[in-house]
Length: 203
Image (cartoon, rainbow, N blue to C red):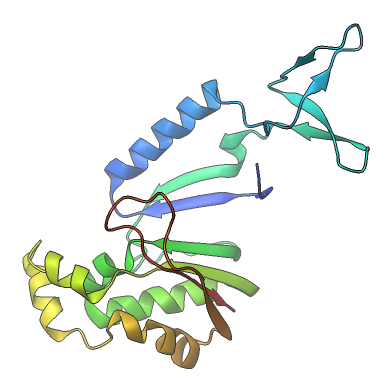
């Protein structure tokens, strides 16, 4: 895998999405070849190259040979259906990176300012020292468009005081992250409505 992750955990409140993620994981595990395109195994009997799904060797720019073993995705990737904001689940470890993409609006509309603060504090506590939080906050205009999806959202929308443009101030001054930066103003190739800035916060 590109970043050589030791473990990846995906959490979502929607069990249907978790079931779909697990289905895709099984499909990729059965049919996918995780080896990078540049990795080839050389057959000593001729000059042709063959792809090897389990183990490959590749020539590095310095001329050395490195061995790449395809990881077992089921040992690395897992998914869990959980209400992260309200869950009392005790996580057994801390993480190097936590990503929160296109979800802050829904947490905010469903659980208000208390919910968004709980989210940020839990993420900070689950990160190792030096860990990073990657966030894609939705703009306030998106809140307005979706405020009527439920009675909870409609009511919470009226009382939100921590607007998305205040998230950075809250995360740095209140929660305790030490620095932040915008790593992308928009995602190239993303569909309309999802080309939002990506922010990174460092613990």
